[in-house]
Length: 257
Ligand code: ADP
Ligand code: MG
Image 1 (spheres, rainbow, N blue to C red):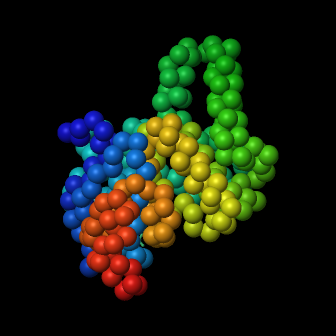
Image 2: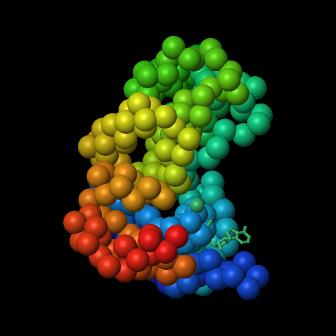
Image 3: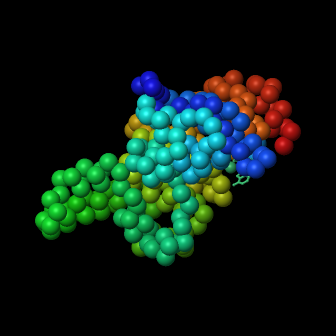
């Protein structure tokens, strides 16, 4: 049972690929409303941990608890439905659609369900009402990410950074409680990176919880209040930035890269 205030708990997670143990008995918790960072050198097992939490990989051992429920081994869409949402790279089919269409077609979570329940099948007027509400939500999101001027642009024509904004916007359409982002700043120019960070902080103030997987230790130090460090598949350290900054084991792990 996960106590309130701890939406996500990872217990003794294990994942092997052939002879490689990518995740080797990792346990940690993410507090509600926090911006938690998961860092570690390349190959530390961050992405594999992320993929086991979100149901992309099946773990070989351990458990993942979300809001008190055991979600180990659930499918990614089931996990997303519960409010634990990850970003996905814009797939090829979506590149051939506009930014607006990408958001209109994004899978809907609670909002969509609530609307769906209120719609009696066959009542055209209400279906149109639902679409109008979704459209309003989509425009608000486009404006929030300052990509409304790109609404009619094909997703395939966006810059690397603009794609990252669209990926995050699509994830928000699911109406999540917790957002997991794996290296959201990779290939993003510094001004867009600052903007993306600002938006993450704003969303966090609105009550969203973030788990941010990053290679860049400085970025995490400056933006997260709780940091989990992985090294060679294991949990190396955990704590607030000022503690992590001065942790000899963390310094050694990064120097040894
Ligand atoms: P990080 O995201 O911290 O850089 P990863 O989780 O991607 O690390 O990788 C951890 C280890 O697992 C690495 O040794 C990597 O080569 C291995 N690995 C990751 N994914 C796979 C896979 N699909 N098949 C085989 N080995 C993998
Ligand atoms: Mg990775």
